[in-house]
Amino acid sequence: MLPQQSGNETNIKLPFAFILTSLAALILSQLILIMNGALVSEGIFRIPPIWSSVHLLLLGWALMTAMGAMYQLVPVAFLTSIWSEKFGFCQFAVTALGIGLFSAMLYYNPGKAFLPGVLALLGIVMFLVQMGMTLKKQAKPNILTLFVGSSLVCLFATIFLGIAMAWSIKTGEGSQLYSPIFKSHLLLGTAGWFTLLIFGFSYKMVPMFSLAHGFGMKLAKVVFAVYAGGLVAMLLSFWTGNKFGLGFGLTLLAAGFLLFAWHIKHIIDKRIKKKLDKPFLFALIGIGFGAIIHLAALAVFLSGHFSAAIGPLLYLYIMLWIAMSILGYLYKIVPFLWWTHKYSGEIGKRAVPSLKDMVNDKAAPPLFILLAGGALLVFASILLKSAALFYIGQTAASLALLAISITIVLVLKK
Image (tube, helix red, strand yellow):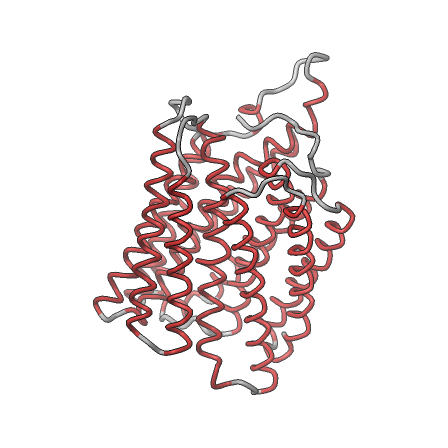
């Protein structure tokens, strides 16, 4: 169940423009990754094709999906309409073109990626302006405002640092700062932007999808303080070279994520809906994966193998925490958007399908299991340096992502 219409709904074409474009970027990112499987299985990540694949996945798919979802969810969560839909369509065009050109240049000629990167930055800044003006209209800020607002700050910093790297590659200037910039870019783009955003909207969607009531939200402030503290500690360690700061930051990140997972469990325990929808259940499983990965990162740091393990762990973080969470929620969000657009005005006039009729929930478990299994095989292939294992795992994960994407798109035919 989702909230009833509040009069703040966004033009359905805007969120779907982002979501459908993002699915094309997702498929392309997986094809590029499979084509370069032999190198990835050897632990070689910092090459143009992998840069292109990662940015198509994180910018072209995950970021564009998040933008589309926020255009619909922010009015529902904050009870205020989007600042300007016309500006939103312009922002979509600029962002899609910028990310597409930027990813293409990363693949063919990274030295020429600076100007397309600036275009992508412009599109993202336009989105930040849109969200900033929208949140400004909110009558009373809440904890969700804190998470979402902070994630948007991390998004801007991530893109700014990415442009700085592109400039360094183009001109050679600031090469001595490339390492801390690169590490900060990765941290803020994954644990900063995506994780804080998923935290924030989980606090809205988990009670919504489980019909939970009577839970407290005071712990959410602690979750934010601890996790944000971990981000700050790690950033300082990157720029100072202090290994203690790195370990302290990883400890805080793990603690913050575990507190979030415990808080979500507490909310789920207060639910009225005893049988959870299967796609939503996998979004919750993604939280479990995220907690395990945070603990694993801390463990490998304490064992002295952090540099060797962080690449494979980052892959799992993207696939099993970020991707699984986004897809699990998207499975619920898209049917509601389309049902509301097509059938909400027809209730009482004719027979209309229920929300459960909009998407096949039974198809979700095998697809999400295939995604998780494939990602774990890729993780093992990198540790074992096995190209054969990589191709099996990445093909499985890619097929799962493709099938989930098709299932979501087919909602539009209902």
